[in-house]
Amino acid sequence: MALVSDSPQHLLGLRFPLRLRVTVRQGFVTLHNEIATKKLGSGDSFVVPAFLRFACDVMPGRGKPAVFSLALEEDEQRDEERDEPRASDGSGKRWSRALARHIFQFPQDRWTAVRLAALWQVTPHKARSRLFAEGEALTSLVREQRLAHALHTAAQAGLDDARGLAEVAAGSGFASVPAFCDACTDVAGVRPSLFLRAPIPPGDTPL
Image 1 (cartoon, rainbow, N blue to C red):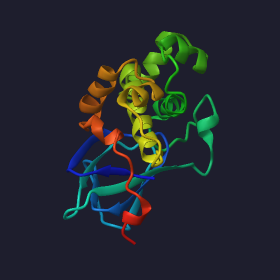
Image 2: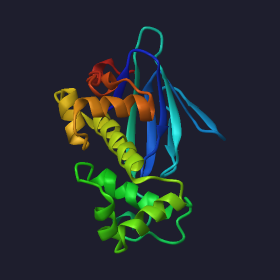
Image 3: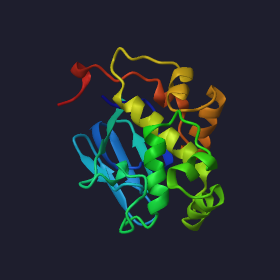
Image 4: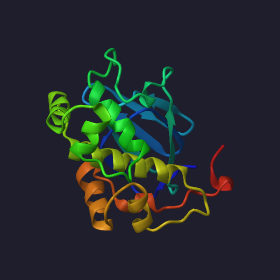
């Protein structure tokens, strides 16, 4: 399925724990960060590297909404299933990336320094220090990955899977609708309504 937007959207600060394939079915999507820009039109797709922070500009076509899909792709070596990341992780943020995968997989869990310490078999102080050394913070990473989970889930929703904001928020681990809406605007600058719009019927999708 896909995400649908009748108006321009400017999503900021997106980051997913695995490679993300963005496919445009209608309209235009521009992916960019501080060093690169990739413009996609109808029928185009692009794979964003794992744990790369990027922005996404969505632009509808003339009289038609923008329609695009998000699909996670597994790494060739599934080290995301290991509690301790590989030292050769090319992202340069091996601890943060490993934690992001856990949070994305279990967004409803209570992610605390104590929980993280148990996962990594270190003290809570040591766990926080590892994230700090990589320029990350536990609270921010949890919020970011819960929002990424909500966005990805919305992109998988079927035509008969209409949900309210409360269900979207709870399903991705947010304590309340206001907390979810705050994350939408503060983390990604996206309107919460994007998570509620049902995908267009297949017959309305251009070939």
